Image (cartoon, rainbow, N blue to C red; front, side):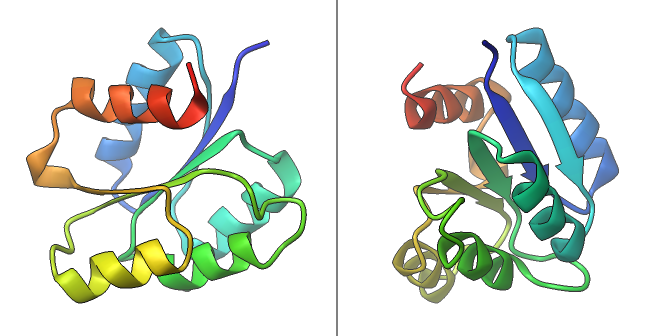
Length: 123
């Protein structure tokens, strides 16, 4: 059974790019443009993995990550942060809130992101 991945990102072109990459690799792809929608979809869809930007409208990625970790049904769902925030404070905060991996968008190719996803899913 294909694994389901939720991508919470407000950049629709990046959503399409990652969505194409994941679906072509056999994953079910769902996406949200806002933190609020991301939380709602995460609770409704029970994804196998969440890819999360930190800079989002309505609720930022830190709020989303906190909600995911504080909900019994999603507390063990791997979350990969994929963002442009490079500060050590942001990295430390995301990891302390339970992010599995922290990736800076400009430093990783699509293939490298895919490898991180596969590793987090145990594929």
